[in-house]
Amino acid sequence: MQIVFLGTGGSWPSPKRNVAAIAVKRGREIILFDCGEGTQRQFMMSSLSFMQVQKIFITHFHGDHFLGLPGLVQSMTLNDRKEPLRIWGPRGIRDLMEVLLRIGYFSPGFDVYVEEMEDGSEVDFPEYTVTSVKMTHNVPSIGFVLQEKDRPGKFNRERAIELGLPEGPLFGRLQRGETVEHDGMTVAPEMVLGERRAGRKIAYSGDTLPSSSFADAATGSDVLIHDATTDASLEEKQNEFGHSSSRQAAQIARDCGARMLFLTHISPRYDDVSTLEKDARDVFENAHVPNDFDEHLVRYKD
Image (cartoon, rainbow, N blue to C red; front, side, top):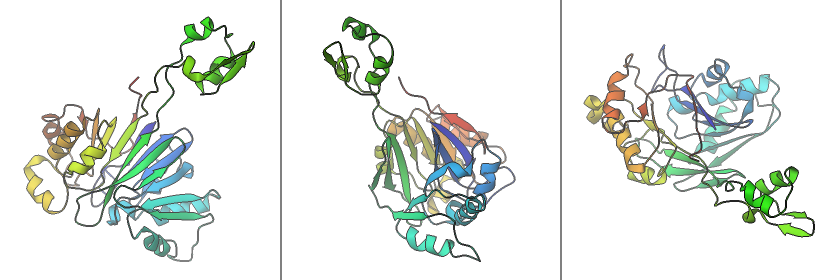
């Protein structure tokens, strides 16, 4: 699982940072969280291809989080995409997409499916789930938690040999969770696999004030990506607009037991982000402000 920060700025683009867009790559699939203006060009300047985006999750309807959608869909069409695209967002996303997909003399060359999510909605995919969490912003907004499903336990090679199994394809089938037959004996996966292991977990806040319900949903995250619009000195003012400071984001990371915190939605006022990182690291040491196009490999705990 690889995170690519396509847009780490807030409110409007700056020379250093485009607006919100976070890509998560799993195998050949790309899951996109938010799609601010210019996201299709950010893809072109990154290691990823926008043609591999299969799912998009939008947190709310401020322009810096969704205005890239019509451009991205049009770029996909001009590159002969035929595969369906699925988009999720808060209530109103269906009406919004109907408008965005009718702008100008243009229509998508592929199917676009749109679904609404509310607090606690869960979308279940074969290998992971994405759950929405109501956030505290000045417009209706949801955050998202991507949770991989449990993996099989570690393969006990010695135990398999004790049972008389030959090394080779049978080992692989057992590791994939299949029951095998050999020399009149049935061997189930649980006979040679340890306890199931947790998958990886990513939590993304979108724009928000500090939220205890989001901290609860993000508990044990491998990566927390949180609104950190300003440093602590401007915290009170930003709270009035429904945003968090880097210090407050770090408090959420600490409270939810995250392994790593990435601070995003950085105000265009900051050329130097050292104050944001310092305020965060005073509370939670493993905090970082990513630059656009930075990549992070999310490793398993075991």
